[in-house]
Length: 360
Image (cartoon, rainbow, N blue to C red; front, side, top):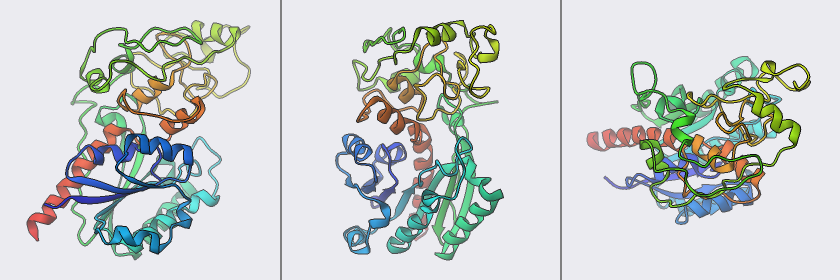
């Protein structure tokens, strides 16, 4: 079977590209990312991919002609999710309409299949009206659709992270969603302990790029396959009062577990909250290094997460590069598709193409 040629739109740091890049049956020809810093991060990890650093609205048909000549089989990607996120303002701003640009590129290149990814909040946006508009738009281009809500924890990611995966094909849609590998009746969910226990014990403001121990499980072996030392593993420096709050929190505790005299007066119920050492993390965001954000305090060390720890909770290997300031690197990580989820999706996409190839 010929290589399956892929384009990644709204590519970010390359989490969704990861599963396709690691499979020899696929070749990613082009990625589009509007932010120059994030585009640089993508290129560091996917040096052989042509990266177009521009607003997708500026992508013209003549720019895409060179890729049309190579026969584009698959388009993957998902527009920025902030407009749809239940943690955000959930408004139909300019970003909320970027799915129309995805459709425009799709109509120019006409691939056999596309994979459209976004947050679970997309399903409830405008009381479910928006997802119906999106599905109608894709269907009008001749694609038969399937849609599922997948939790990354079901595929070995040490984090509960729900994502809408909309798959369209020209002709009969034979794509099958990846079967769960973890959870009840299957392998146990990967936990923070599974992901982080070989990493050094740190205090607030400390940095240590040396591993604490040899790998303790298959997940840690995956992270460390091509690494002898950590990068981006410094803990953010916090004030004395916040450090005291974090140390007083029990495993999985929130500010309601604190003495009244030290309890923060602002924030939601899951802010200033500690994760569980023996459970998957909750969904991490770009603010995973900020203790006052959604539950993200390190349960073992009682401090803010390092950039590398956030990357591990997304299943990026330790040799994966991020670029820019700490906050920019955390954004790149927090907005990404977990590589383990992308691997599971890529494997199922390949099966569909193999079935088509067999029947042609």
